[in-house]
Length: 113
Length: 112
Image (cartoon, rainbow over all chains, first blue to last red; front, side):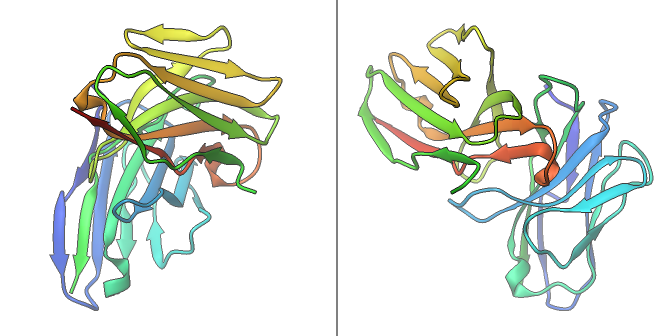
């Protein structure tokens, strides 16, 4: 079983609040990813990192930001939550070497009221 | 045209049926291939890697055709518990998206 953890599991928050979604992995993986997924829809990459101090935006425009100060930690922050941010956020990591699969956390389901 | 394409389905099959999904990719720099399974409102979970020579895990068989640029997943003797969305994942060199490209998924529904 992969060791990648997301907290909180569920979050209901009011518009305008600042929130941070946590993601940690204990596998020493260099590459980490954040995806956004609405129910029944495809995954959209919003951020990724290839290692400490490396962060890139994905293909889906997002008002969130990320940081990668430590290998094991890749938090995602929304400065001012809006109802349009309501979605499931999935964190994933991989060793990044040939043939290494992606391991997912169990997700954070965010509802902004 | 999307870089990785899957038939979205849904595939509605009876228990015990054999069902096959294909996934096509357009970038010849694609290196690694995987099938993931995603249950409703859950995270994707690795079902199996896809090797050049083809590989089998119980009722599941995965194959790669580099010449035609597609991978396939065959499920034999379908169970009710196989109902899920099956995602094709391609890892390639260069480009954006962190080098990981997901298909949109194929939905499978196995009926009694």
